[in-house]
Amino acid sequence: MDMSDEHQFEVYRAQREMQSKYVHFLLAAAGAGIGLALNQTRDAAMGWVHLPLAFAVVLWGLSFFYGCRHLQNLNAVFEGNTRVLRLEATAPSPATKSDLMSQLQRSVRHAGRCARLQFRCLVAGAVVYVVWHAWGMYLRRIAG
Image (cartoon, rainbow, N blue to C red; front, side, top):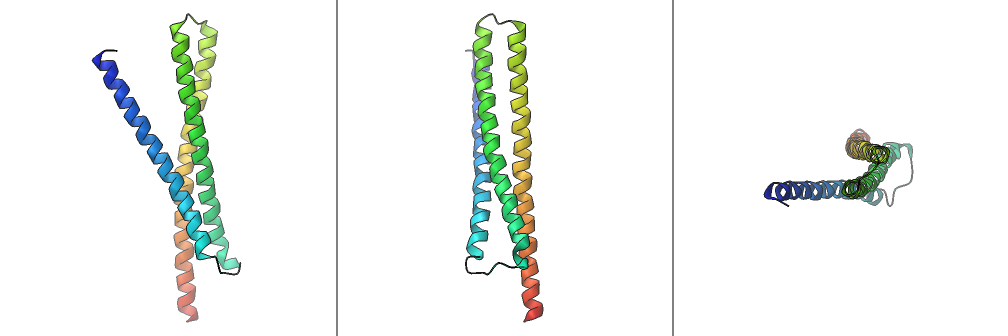
């Protein structure tokens, strides 16, 4: 491996590590949002006023789900890359390589879609939570 290959590998490794930390951060944020909502309503009776909060929890749950799916798809991408490298070491048939590359591209598309949905659901859940909280503050102000 020459210096250029080594540098490319190091950049790729650093990018992969940063991407993994980011996905895990978003997973933790979604879990924290769900925990906060459950903690805040621990002693509350269920009512219509909690509907927006339930919606926020559903969005955070979807964010968590899509984060897990994103990680699964990334694993499929890395396994696919490994298979491509092994295949290139042999003399593969063009059809075999084409099939593998199309599976790899599908995993890349799915991973990207899940990453976008993970982030969007997390942010949407936070927005709904803030709106619910502000609405509750307003209701307490006019009631008291």
